[in-house]
Amino acid sequence: MTPIYPEVVVITVALTVLLLDLFVRKEQKSSLGWYSLAGVIIAALATFKLMGVTGSFFAGTFLLDRFSVYFKFSFYVACSLGILVSINYLKIEDIHRGEYYALMLFATAGMMLMASAGDLITIYLGLELMAMSIYVLAGFMRRDSRSNEAAIKYLLLGSFSSGIMLYGMSLLYGMSGTTNLAGIHAFLRGADLANPMVFLAMIMLIVSFGFKIAAAPFHMWVPDVYEGAPTSVTAFMSAGPKIAGFAVLLRVFSYALQPLQHDVTTIIAGIAVLTMAVGNIIALSQTNIKRMLAYSSIAHAGYALVGIAAGGPEGVASVMMYVFIYAVMNMGAFGIVIMLRRSGERGEEIKDFAGLGKTNKMAAFFMLIFMFSLTGIPPTAGFMGKFYIFKAAIQADMVWLAVVGVIFSAISAYFYLRVIMVMYMSEPQAEFKLATAPSLAIALVFSLVTVIYIGVYPDNVLNFARASIAAIL
Image 1 (cartoon, one colour):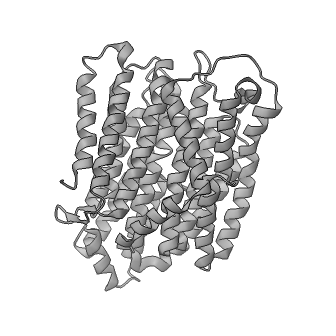
Image 2 (tube, one colour):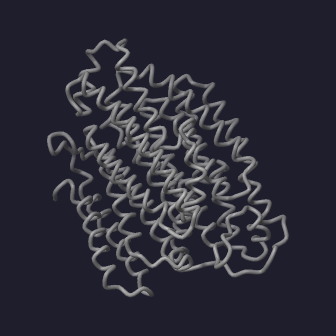
Image 3 (tube, one colour):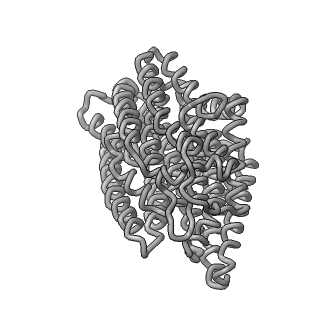
């Protein structure tokens, strides 16, 4: 089986979705979502068959190893949940265009390419395939001014960050004579690390990747884009692209730029503290659930950066585990937000959750678990994710960073638990029927079970991550 078979499957399914969209009637467009989901499952099975295969292909530009396999499975989960929460949401919003699912698949293919990248050019191509697809998805509701604004802001700032990335890559290429990650690693081991061009290239890559993972102070686009984009798109873009960003960040800084580890650690630790501070403190004052989850996303990027700053096998493995956990619990939370969306009302304000514990106990229970997990309360996956992140920091003699992380995690309890208080302590404003559907129910149940299972049995995911890091350390 060819090493790029999973990518070929995803892209082929995306292209056939565009073709089938011409022949499928408007009221049957949801079938394209199920078809896309089947394609993702086939790609996952192909990736599973390739788990024992390792190597460098296409002149070192494409790597197949356990590290890339781990992240590809994470992308499949994010894409599958994204498709499932979208099927009914698109009906509610009266969006009947099959290219929605094709764009989601193209974005996933870009993420997969990023995870397997062994070359700076491959990283850039995968990133742009992912980014351009999501630019369009963010503005998919063409008659909604907020959606248009989200797409324009994301496009402009995303293009700017991509330019910075290219400039940083060009500096590395100019000094090393190669764009191959292994070649750059070999060059830096014998280079003069005091060269200001080396430091400038490193800073430019940190800035550009910081934009992609929504780290402060490169986070300015996140609240407006998350709020304005269709909620199903926000759910997907808060999970998949963030995982992809960390996949590249780990491969580049833990391997290619490993000789610069001391400088990288100091800078990443500072960004982690700033990111946790900005995300958690500004989230305290939010009244819109999508903006609150946007700042929450920034804060969680900060927690993951703590693991990168810690470095070493435990630090890298904890980051890999954490970004997967975050994707699942965040997708679940957005799934409940989508349930509150009904014709004529967005259901995006925190006050819209008032009395949900009395009018729909099941939905309130699901949101309760997701909020507990995002806070980091046991026995949820969010607790185990933060536990291993902070443990790695302590083992790396960065106790101060772990303490800062715990403090900000405690601060975050206020805005997460506020949602729970509104659900259970407030009276319902009006009776309404939640926008439920089998596809959304599948996504929510999967997210809930995963959050609880990893919270009780974290070793399976953690050991998979630990077994996957040999390729970059």
